[in-house]
Image (cartoon, rainbow, N blue to C red; front, side, top):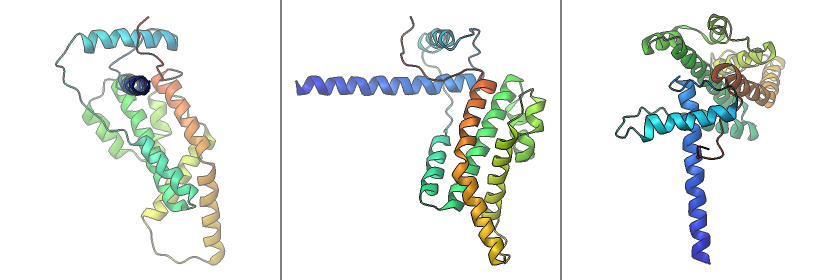
Length: 220
């Protein structure tokens, strides 16, 4: 009985790992425009992707893959960890990093969709400042505006991060210092709403899906 339970546990772990890999590959294929679905519903797109996966990967062995490390989950965990410890400067630092990873990922997908080269992509990311990336650059790619409230929240986090990272060692009055700390705490404590909004924005407007989550690896 113990062996049966152990085998069942191992099988469940393998299935969960397979689904995780599948979901990550699906998201990556959408983001890189390797897979451009024709179906209109999420269910049909997932079936279409599994068929695509079968033809492109399973039936063509010995292919070479390029790998990208996605740090965003770990970055967000660090941001929340430091916020819970009331270490707001460090929390702000990691939220700012997450915002920069987010918008650069958006730009990468838009560049791929518009047939820009990797060199073009690097030049855009390197030579366009943060505010430009989340405003007029998105307009050029015909994406809807990021809601003003969330855009300002992103900019505030970046401003607080810059003040911390590029510290000027300039003295402040006690009242000004207290206001700075209060404003920082307020924005960090409320920023998760902006993170949630941006995740939905990415799915809807960039990947053009409602979800990236398989529950089965079978093609029906």
